[in-house]
Image (cartoon, rainbow, N blue to C red; front, side, top):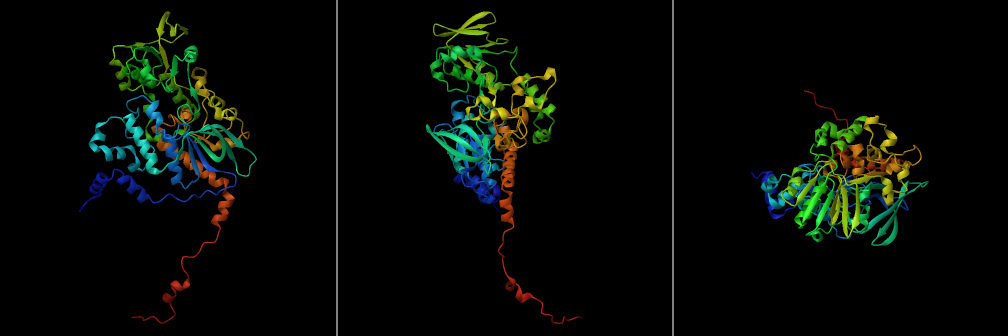
Amino acid sequence: MTDLSSLAQAGAAADPDFLARETLRLIGPAPDDWVPAHAGIDHNVAIVGGGQSGSAYAFALRRAGIGRVTVLDAAPDGARAGVWRERARMQKLRTPKNLVGPELGLPALGFQAWYEARHGAQAYAAIDRIPRLAWADYLDWFRSFLGIDVRYGTRVKRIEPVTGAAVPHFRLHLEIDGQPRTETARKVILASGVAGNGAPFVPAVLSAAVAAGLAAHTADAIDFAALRGKTVAVLGAAASAFDAAAVALEAGAAAVHLFARRDHIAATPVSRIRAYPGLYDNYHALPDATRWEQALRYRRAGSTPPADSVERVLGFEQFHLHLSAPWRAAEIEGGRIAAQVRGETLRFDFAIAGTGYLVDPAARPELADIAPHVLRWRDRYQPPADARDDELGASPYLGSGLEYLEKTPGSAPWLRDIHVHNPGGFASTGVPLGDVPSMRRDIPGAVARISRDLLLADLPLHKRRIRGEVPVDFGPEFYAAALWKGEDLEVE
């Protein structure tokens, strides 16, 4: 007898998408859109960001029977997992290869099944973590195979709540290929990447260099080929800083100097200790004091670069590491950067800021009008004096469906219809939202909340629907011949 595994292998040999197609066949078609349509509202849900999180949300909402979902992305048309090909510079993803990703519980749609179908099970077993470009290829396939339509070249300029309407919704002010347009949506998901609740943080000491075109943030598109033969400074000592330093070295930089504020490179991944299911699955139930303590512990321990990211630069003799070396000042002299570091003047042709991101919704143009109403951690929780952290306090305090909450109760009830899936939610969720570790728990949780909210918002319509006439499957004539007509029964 041929077993299922043999059939799967035979099918995959002829068609790499065999298991994925079978999975979709076996789970059946997505439910019909059950959300009532309302005049003047274009979309039930608008997803801002078409990357891995936005694509996963689009699929999850489809399987929840929520239709009229639009996915908006500011990247040019056909960008195809652009962040992974352009601004991400690691060789491998920083997370374990076996975490649940955008497939959300359907293994045949996951990276492992996709990779094994194309390269074999032994090839998957041989990799310790997922190669970055393989992940980009997988995400391209995920969107294409599932028919997720991303509207590239569409930038959200402003999110405006429409108050007083019969059906609460938002007016989205868009720029599509440079042209203004307005659309409406009942729910908004911010799946807009690492800067989705703020902006790249560039230290003030680099302001003059940035203005002169002699410095950039790791979030920027950097012409590394132009750094060949140049002396480059990298500020920061987390993974993105080491990755940028490595690419500069690989591009032929004459020297790369990496500057860390600490007296060591952070190497203690404190978040790993709380990755077990009990805590991960129930993180929102933890007291505020416990969540603050964990977020603060992470910040004080520092973001740890993977060992292979550090090893990648150590192979170059022209790499130089500076510890306890924050930049105090920097000026432009003769087309170069003259930096004051530990009492010395050091000169560079170019500087790269691997200094992370500012978490502040007010820094995002599309959120500027909304930001004053958003509840922050500093509004909700006052830590002891020795546990103060102003940057952490500025983080939005999210509800259990990843929704914004009101700073002043009753002043902005519409905030509950904006759901956040970007790293700005770290203090609330314990993981950087948008990274792979956040997907298994937080995407289904947010979709369940969106589904509940849409149902309750239209409850009178649903009551009418469920009280409606239901046609019978058959009438009395169907079983009439079997009716007992009262004849005597024989008794032995």
